[in-house]
Structure formats: C-alpha cells, structure tokens
Amino acid sequence: MTDETIGTTGIAGHGASRLPLVEIVSFNIELKDEDGFLGDRASQSAFREILDKWRNPLRKTGKDPFGKEPSESISKKVLDSILVGDDTEASAVVHSVVEDFAHELAHVTRRFLKSKAWEKTERIVLGGGFRDSRLGELAIARTEIILKSEDFKIEMIPIRHHPDEAGLIGALHLAPSWIFDGHDSILAVDIGGKNIRCGVVETRRRRSPDFSKAAVWKSAFWRHADDEPSREGAVKRLIKMLKDLVSEAEDEGLKLAPFIGIACPGVIKSDGSIEKGAQNLPGNWESSKFNLPASLVEAIPQIRDHDTTIVMHNDGVVQGLSEVPFMQDVKRWAVLTIGTGLGNARFTNRNGKVGR
View 1 (cartoon, rainbow, N blue to C red):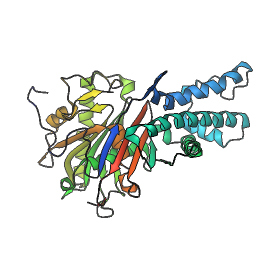
View 2 (view 1 turned 30 degrees about the vertical axis):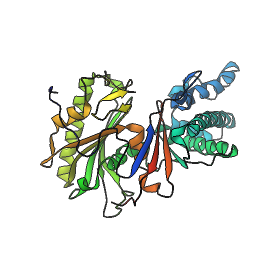
View 3 (view 1 turned 90 degrees about the horizontal axis):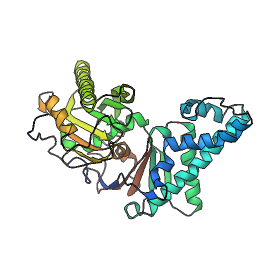
View 4 (view 1 turned 60 degrees about the horizontal axis):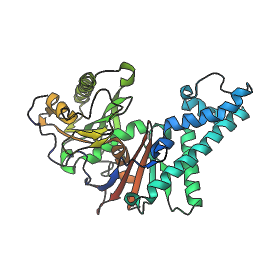
C-alpha cells in the first residue's frame, strides 16, 4: 500500500453508527466481572468446558459415554444426534450441558439488558456458529424462558439465515440504495478468527425491495487458522478470492455493484483501521500502518468500470444487519453472536419502511 491515503467510501464512515435503516446504539461492548470478560462465559469454548465438567464424574467411574474423545473435538452434529439418541446417559449429559450453558447465557444477557446501551431492548437475535445446531436452538429457547421467569420482557430467536451466510447478506445494509441502481449483486467479506469467507450476494430486489429474499449466489471459504499466514499473506489470499468471484459473477452475467461490504472483528474506526479486538486475526491488524479497505481498493480499484466503494464494520453488527427486514415489528433490538467470543450489537430502527 502506498503512503497516499486512498478513499474507500463516500457514503458513510467505516464502523458508522448511522446506517440507511438503523442506528447502531452500541457494538462490541466488553462487559467484565470478577473473572474477566463476561462474554467468555457464553462462548463456544465455554460450552465445551461445561461439557467437560459433566463428563469428569463419569470418567472416574469408567462410564463416560464419549470415551476418550476430547470435549473440544466432539462435533455439534454428534451432540445433536445424542440429544435424540437411545443412549439415555449420554443424552442426559448433553441436556445437562445445555441447561448449564443456558443459565450462563441468561446471566450474560441479563447484564447486557441492564446496561444503558441496551435499555428497552425488545428482541435479541442469536447468531454465530453455535446457533447452527439443535443444542444451540435449545439453549436459546431455555435462556428466554429463564429471563421471562425473572420478568424480563424479551424475545430471543435464532438468526434466520445460516450464520455463514448472515455475515455476507448483512453487508447489503451497509450500502445506500443508489448503489444498487442497475446492479443485482454485491461482493461481501466475512472475516473471523479462524476463517475468511467471501461471497457474491444477490439482492433479489424485484422479489423483495427490503432484501428479505437476498441470498448468497456463490461463496469462497478459507480456514486461515490451518495455514497460519502472515497478515500480508492473508490479504493477498483475500484479494485473490474476491477477484475470482468477480470473474465468476461476470461469466454468469450478474451485474455486480461497485461495492464491497466487509465484516471484521473488533472496533472499526471511521478511516477503516481497527482500534482493538482483532487479536485473533493473522498478524497485527491493529497497526496504524495497516488499513484493509485501502489495501483492497488499491488491488481492486474498479468493478464493472466503476470506482470501487468499500465499507467495513464489526462482524457482529453485519451479521445482525441480515435481520433488518424481519425486525420491523419492533423498535429496539439486538444481536448476540456465539462463537470464539460473544459478539454483540444493539440497533434502533430508523423511521420509514425497509423497502428502499
């Protein structure tokens, strides 16, 4: 990247609090208790720790139904099958884990709801990889029951789109309506602590002006945690993924908008740099000398003969934005994403209809 500052957006600052359809009241809040960051109590790793706790007494008697398999290696698919399987002892263990995790999630959610930023929240959408399982859905439902028993008037629902796609589809709501004139799709990027996913998202505006029918046409996936690349290596691989998708979209006859929406962990500053929260990404993404949007717009200066515009926001925010069309019956809503950590964002709908 050159020393010259490269403009990447003329529509809104990266990490903006005001978007076309919502105000972002807060995101990436780091609540703490005596044991550290509160969100760590309701992460996927916390679930595995609870599973291990329930297995310990069974290990001592030699009756652990999971054998010698480490708790972190047991897939969600296996755990889901055990929930409805014939092994009652194994099923009882998983149900116990779900119950304990639901209480932890309720504790964390309670703290969010009592914060000023989350005041009067009516609905919480649960996303992240944990949601993509039956045990995740049970934990969400049980958490809602626990909170309602304490007189919290809150609804908790799993995110509608698959979590892998929600982080791409939500990027549509980072852009203003005019950028879609004459175009039917955008490029989107979802960066995680272990994976990077890129995709072409079809707007399907003719079928649904509010983007409720939007879908991922094609995506590319890279588990960077396995390769342990440098920051420069990761950016180079990301650029190649995007360029390949541009070529495929053009071959298919899609009309890509000159826009790339990026979901990235951390606190995103208005210039596209990352203030904090990117510690799980390869290399130092919080360096003052590094700017991902600028690096991408330098590598992909145009899409379909138009100057490329890039907007980057927090990954929890972008995943939550995929729910905008379905949140029009409430005013104040939020998202919690259960993954490596606990992503969070609180939204207030702006006046007007979703269809733009």
